Length: 419
Image (tube, rainbow, N blue to C red):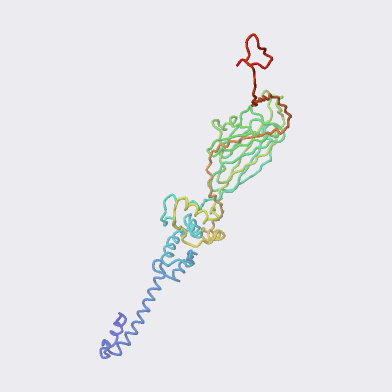
């Protein structure tokens, strides 16, 4: 008996005997009460379906659709369970409040590539997790190279002067690279000045720049000023406008004006055997810098993510699987970024190719030997002289008959013998 059945029994008078469990009226009211209980449960479930913690099935899909989040396919072909989708939806929805954040974009891209939305859920070492996080790079304010050439030179106060304006808005300051090309006329007393700051650099008055020369002014990564004239370092010939170490002013976020001045040969200073002229120099200036674009960001992902991840897992001897979703492929990443970004913000997608081969440098010593064999096949005549000894032994036996000889009587040439 349900509560609904009790309520129906209380409505009827006692004369109906509705409280008797064996009566037909009770059975009818109990059946009606059971249906009303089912309706109550469905109504309660309908009310709960508006909450992520309680929604399930199609109701949970509907809540995800509000933010453009759908169930992700799993590697074996099925889709996320309610519990897994609910956890991911609860982590994504707060990030969409007020527009896409860095974490939201990175998580959406990682999820589209097959990795978890939050890599912190993986049971891997900190070093491996850090390398996996480096696979998806996000840089705010897309860097764009800017190049402007100025060549309108006027004569002001006995010197050539050029005013250069930068009007492109940026999200951060950037130090320029200045390429100063000289045409006709020699130049002395060069100055570069950013007018709103009254800061810049000047060259040594004794330094002469001949026609056709190219002077490049720049700043190294560590902030050191450099000046190169026709491939020759002349940084030591420059100082700041107010003295001290030279330094190029940065390109500001908004517009700015730059003044370039150069004088020609001067009496009592210039030497006439150095190629100097008294004509004012004609020159052109090229300014290049990196402009960080407002309301933009760059996302860089590896084109072959699976190969790169396998190499990382092999390096760390990790045998588990870090892919929890079926990847959508690199061609789907631009649409994922477009769906996740905040309104009015431009997202650019770049793909990288990461090499996994070992580029470690090793020293190796090789010895080269040259073996040459020369064979002389010339024929020569030879004459040998030697001595040959020959010994002949006669083994013949003879019998002799002799008469006894007497001294002083027998002769030696006759048949006589002394034996």
